[in-house]
Image (cartoon, rainbow over all chains, first blue to last red; front, side, top):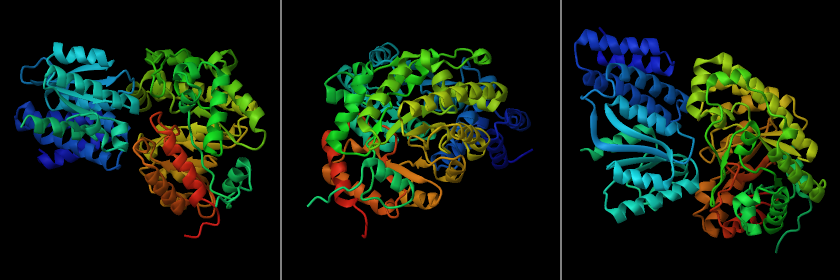
Length: 212
Length: 348
């Protein structure tokens, strides 16, 4: 039986090679051999591997495609061992995730996979216009909203969402991400977001911090 | 006192591409949407008529004095020729609508559109012809194509595209074959209409997006194939993505120019390109929105100090499109700074 550290390294290696069979076998053998629950394996093996991959992306050591494939494979495996309807999943806080009328949904997809892999349930709104987001914030009682944008004008349009939240006093926390925020590190404050996530892992840390 | 400019823009650009120092540093303000402002109309209306776009380009060059005309409309214009759609905004670049390839299997029967049947593509050719008539041989006209390797995020979505690259190489190859056929024909049509060079937008090839090893077996080979079939010089543009780790591969593919990201050190990129390619870049377009004239002056001076010596450098933004929110004041400040700091010889 492998040590946790070795399992993490092997899982990371398999994920970066897009080798789902090996990745699944590492996760399942940890579940069976160590007779621990799913969340223990998530905390000790899967999350550290994904976090390491996220940091490698942040440092420019791997490409976006590798981070995407790693998160996708992990999400598929997690959904098999911990289906979305499993009551052990965390449905609190109410998390929404969206892009603004933009089909570039990769960043959103990676973050969603990462949060799913951590056992969070979240509502993916796909790509919707501002007015629809406002509706959803109220009707779905969204507590944390991730918004990813590719273009500057869409990033600036987030101001409308944060203004709505302030007016309606919904207390929704808005976490922004995407290319414009990477090239202007003051932009997230300008649109009155609560935080900016440079990476998917960064987004995950922010939400964990918000939950205390 | 303003120094007299002795060269035409074309002479200036060709001299720098020949790795020699022209009279002053050439600079490209890659402006698209600002033309709509100039003509007092919406972005959508502006791009509806090739004469508007030509007029916008002419007026903006008169105003700022930069060294090219740029016939780029918006990225999804090509996708419209394939049957895709575009979403227009009042204050930003048009964006592609939902991917038109809904089922991956549809790639098997996908055929490249005939460019002569696409009213959208014909508009770009018309703009190019008008500008050529205006420019003669004095101003370079930069045409644009999306690389076959970087069009699929608009054709089928980024996630499905990555799935295709990693999990279905047969259909990936088929898509690249069709896209390459289209890209070569589209680029050569623009050159035929009067474009001086082609800017080959290929952000997916950047090591920011795919690993270098994967690029070498995919994007680089495609790039090489396209460039070798074009009837004019090519600039490879990674649209804000990093270029440094693949500089040699881009040069080997036959590119005359590479555009570098503002996330990279210009001096380092210039050194890596020495003797192989010229460098275009790398002012941060997003940040430009917040610049004062003083900041613009400093940024331009810094770029000149890092890369202008010896030629082989054209100053521009790093993305290939200056955001709509960047003010006239900043664009004038950039232009003034080039004329203040960019005359050769540069001995600082």
